[in-house]
Image 1 (tube, rainbow, N blue to C red):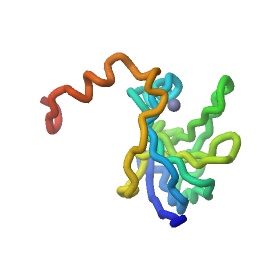
Image 2: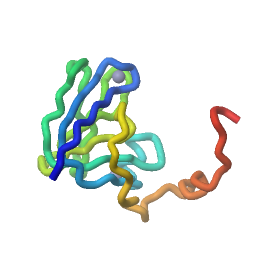
Image 3: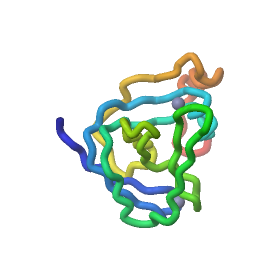
Length: 135
Ligand SMILES: [Zn+2]
Ligand SMILES: [Zn+2]
């Protein structure tokens, strides 16, 4: 399979990365852990075959959190909290938070997973009026 080079960064701009990986899936995950850790209704993760993430700047700001109760990880910038790519604990999958990318990955979401865990307000939000900027 073809590999794709992706570049991304955190909000504050301290951390930049490049990763070249074979992209497999693109999931919106509505599980409780993803809602907590993003502070939002779902996590948008591109799943790829394991590959090295090259931290082109700010590696000293990169922190890993492994949730003890379940195989669940987040890597984030210690300055601004933005999510960054990580290899899962079993080292089978590289998770790339799609919102951290500075490019269009080309792939599009495949599935909404842990749909049964979704927030009670998610679907109402999809149907809400759309405004450019604050109304
Ligand atoms: Zn940052
Ligand atoms: Zn999840």
